Length: 236
Picture (tube, one colour):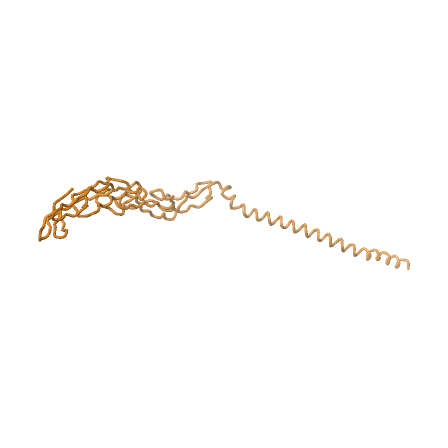
């Protein structure tokens, strides 16, 4: 497309630009300047290529790149790009917009997940992130509920097996089962202690028997002499 230039001494009129002493007409939307005008030659305009655009009259040699809407960044195409207008992006589910642009979104961020021990005070929207609040003592949440639940109170005939935390409920059970894990350690320790006493007693008993036997062996000659002395005294 060729547009003839005009020679003027003052500022160029609207939709024209100065090149040397010439006022060259700008290229229309969807086109770019491929060659400036001269006194004898018109402005040469060229259509924007695919993936580029110009949304108004311009004197630029290059078209603007179309905005990308990458799904990996939480965006999708709301309005596709043309040679005369840029693309518009919108949010994927689970994201909120951090930077708006002419009815679209340029930058998105995923809604945060509440951690165990927190509850969802306000769900995320297209413009705001999720709001999480910590559970107070005596209540719990796995992070997916909109409120904290009170810990279960064990009923009659039951005993608490495991206390509740801010992220888990308390657990109840029958007293015998509840006491089993408490009693298992002391019972095992007592059993080991008794076995050790028995082993020590047996060892000491064997030692005592051996000592007594050795003592008796040493006393045998002495015991044999005692009756002989008694017999001598009787004969006298």
